[in-house]
Structure formats: structure tokens, C-alpha cells
Length: 411
Ligand SMILES: *Cc1c(COP(=O)(O)O)cnc(C)c1O
Image 1 (cartoon, rainbow, N blue to C red):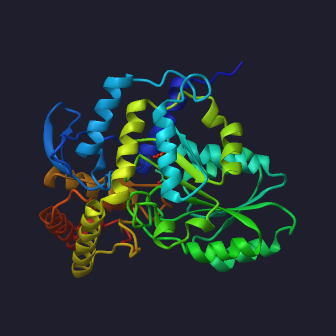
Image 2: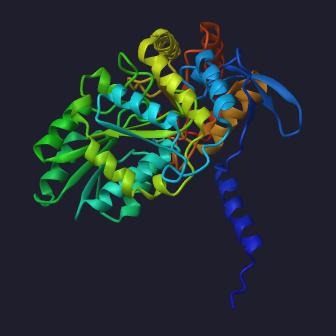
Image 3: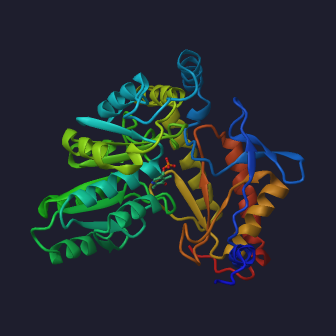
């Protein structure tokens, strides 16, 4: 008989995280329509404080857009709260069909499929693909999201990790792999924690040369890149060269839910075999009505994208002038590396407590140890004065070097 004390065991596991400075403390926000990126912080002691949010993935403010809110309201009043079942058993609503048609059009593909979230879409699609293809080999970028890694792992297929965005390494691995094995290259367009963008065209060229399928996560790009918000592949005219594009309604589109688009044959196979798609209640009609409104709105409206581009450029220019050590990627994500978990937490605590600036510290395992960072997102909803104030505070903190006594500030 085991003499384990379960209580003590789990408490010990959590205190290890605390000692490391990587215990996650949630910050409770109340976002009020019309005021974003400003919001109300509900503190642990029951008091409240007005803050500006600097780490939201509602990049375009679509979660509060009247077009989206009205679509959600209409759908909930017409069709009620829940879908009432799984997709196969009474849970396919007219909104599922409309959203999937809209996504097909967005990516100019034969088919689209909606999942509960982007995480579930990656896990479900990749695990099904890799399991169905006999002796499949996956080539996965070193910085791929946990959901892709999980999907590949659960298929138990062979996997090679290539160095982040390293075309030579990728090609070498493909060259060394058995010629006759089916192959998938899995990668992202915008990398969410470094803010850089993959060389998509060159990866497609390599894929073609070795007859590999391409699987592209555009979660941080849909809604924001390309003339209709299709993502970076659309912006670069490469939609037809990607076999499967994966995205989310949870970030630029402002709601929740994930999706994939591709050829009818592949999408139908995933629909038929992906466990995470089949055995779960489908998304509520109201969420999909909101997603549909958001996707359709951003196909034609450029105001949100232009505002975000202006804000990001303004922020990066000020960071440059202030010589703040941010990672200089091409995307809208601006990571500021602190390089130590405890110090990172100390910085973000000071920002919210003293200055009402909310940014969550990003720690291991989301990023490698020693590269702990702030991940700042200037959304379409920020005003230039918000950015001025943020940079002023950061500049003061970074010149106040005693804060970084035990940190190696990496550029
Ligand atoms: C957030 C994220 C996901 C998951 O999307 P959700 O809709 O939030 O589940 C997938 N891939 C990447 C790169 C992400 O950053």
C-alpha cells in the first residue's frame, strides 16, 4: 500500500513553481464595452483599479465591435444559448454551415471545419492526419505552439524538430528522411512569443520538392494580415500553396473557436476521424454568429487593420528611440525580454500596481528559461497617448537598473 499523502504531494508541486517564480497568478479583469483597452481590475482584496490592458489578443477590438455584439444578441434571441449536441448528433446549426462557407471563401479553399478552439483544431487535425498517413513523418518548427506538439505526439508518428525558421536545417532533415514516406511540415506564420514571421514561400518550395504536405497555423494572423484578413499566406499570395491553414476566432476575431481550411478530401477525413472534433458539444450558435459577423466584417473593413498597424509602428519607433531591448520581428507582437522569471514578475507587478498598466509576465515553459519576457500588444483600440505613457514608464524602469540586479537583460 502506498503511503503517499496526496495533499502534501500536490502542495509541494505548487510550491516548487512558487520558488521558481513561475506560479501563475490570474489577474481578474472586467472589460467594459466602449472603454477597451481600459478596463477594471478586480483585486484579490476586493478593491478595484482602472488599468490599461497591454497583453490582450483581442488585437482589433472585435470582441466589442457593435457588428459582432449585435450578431451575438440576435442569434441568442432567435436560437437560444447552446447548440444542443455534438456536430453529428443534432448540434450542427445553420451558423456552423454559414461560418464554414465564409472561411472557405476567406482562404479560397474547397472546405472548412470549425472546432471548439484553436488548440482543439491543431490537436485534432494533426493527430488525425499523422495517424491516418502510414509511416508519416512530421517536420515541426522548434517554436511551434503546444497544441501542435500535442497533436503530433498523440499520433505517435515520427517527428523531427527543425531549428526555428531554419530552411537549411528543414531541408537537410527532409533529404535524410526515407523518400517514400508521407511527410508533413507543420509551422506557424506569426510566432506568438517572438513576434517573427516564417519564410512561408521558401518552406512551400521545399515542401513541393519533397512532396510534403504543408500545415500552417495562422492563429495570430487571421483577421489582421492580407487584404481580406486571410492571414500572412493571403498577404503573400500563397494561399493555394498551403494544404491546411489553421486559425482561431479567439484572437483577431474577438470571440472563441478554432478552424481549419483545405481540400475537401483532407477536411472530410479530419471531420471523420478527429476525436477532438467528434466527441464534444459543438459551439453555441451565438458564438458562431459573432464569428461570422467578425470574419465578414474584416473581409471588407480595413480601418481596424490600419489602426493596429499605425499603433504598432508608433510603439516600435518609441521603443527604438528609448533603446528598449525588444525583439525586432516583423509582426504586431512586441516582446520585451527581461531574462529572469522573478524579475519579470517584479516588473509587471510594479507596472500594474503603480502605473495601472496590465501586462502578464511570460515564463517557462511558454518561453525558454532565461528569456522571460513581457509580450506587449498594441491593439487597434489603443490611442497614441496610451502608447506614450507605456513607453515613458518602461523607459524609467529600464534605466532604473537596480530592478534588474539579478537579471541578464538580453536584446
Ligand atoms: C493561442 C494559440 C492557439 C490556440 O488557439 P485558441 O483558439 O486560443 O485555442 C494555437 N496556436 C497558436 C500559435 C496560438 O498562439
